[in-house]
Image 1 (cartoon, rainbow, N blue to C red):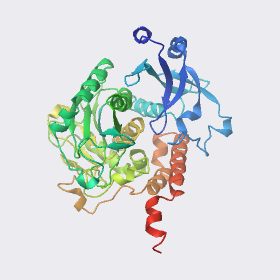
Image 2 (image 1 turned 180 degrees about the horizontal axis):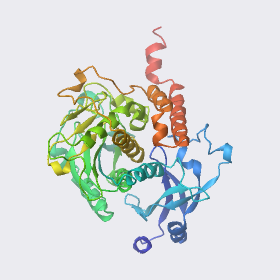
Image 3 (image 1 turned 30 degrees about the vertical axis):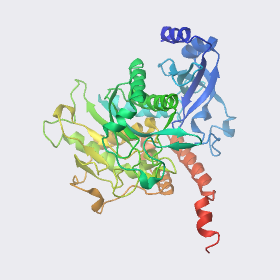
Length: 447
């Protein structure tokens, strides 16, 4: 790792800018700039960083109700390298790079609010059962052209009535081939298993699949790094990429779908029983996902904008149900080769934190397996026409559901549950305090 890092520094040609940073609860990088002379020390020994860096809100403000702020004097922990080394910034002419960190306290105990540690804690529970999750992410995003102070869709102006659907358009792919060529190259250099690319439901919207890997921590790392690379390479091509769940009100939102299967100690897929229906363990896993979905919605839809994506009649599921080969269901069991029998979780938005999304999915699967839960009957056809239980349809409801959950306390530490809930509550209160132009235009003179 050190050899690779210094090879990159030597090839940079000028003094590089090095950032050492951790991923916070919102999936945003927080950290410090360090001199090149400190790279070896940071990679091998770490760097001092406040434990509270993981739990600032989306604007970077301290969490007011946090046990890691004034209560403890906002103490430092130790940010240690996750083992990846250096992630170069390919869009920056100054040759900058990032060292990904995760946070430990001064006794080398993992921080309970570091999202990478939250995921790692769930993974360890699978090891106790001699099971190994195999997971893959699918990420959707919009690629927009920058023109002056406005951000434009590559094909049409932001006049939403003019934005067509453009499902599986090879024209959209071809018009952005230089961007995708760069993205494939960068992912190849860092062993990020990027697979297929497709044009999604709207013009300028794309979905990229990452290959399945049998280390969930690595899979989440790949998803977080992948989002970073997409944004940086878009900048290089004078574009901007957004993972907002719903950047346009009248066209498709962007999701983060997760595929998973489970291997036993012999490498056999325990979801497979050589039938279309799958094994009883698969069904118990589905039941766990459905049973915990309402209380986990805040993780899948963590932002104000997230709930504008969750609407009836879209491919953003709102009903707590499952089905075989049914993309209108929250949990889908795809067809295909029995050996690759798997579950697809379709609720999370592209704006969610991959570490926490995967934590919730895996914890719910584990809950279903341990308690041998039995799912409701699979739903055929359009699930939106069925009268089914729904996930929380507002941010406030999701915060309440997450905060009052007793099961979440079985999955995660009490500290994490309280901090995550309080972070989202603080962000909600910020939005509630604002009076927007549309509100003024509607009410100022009419009532």
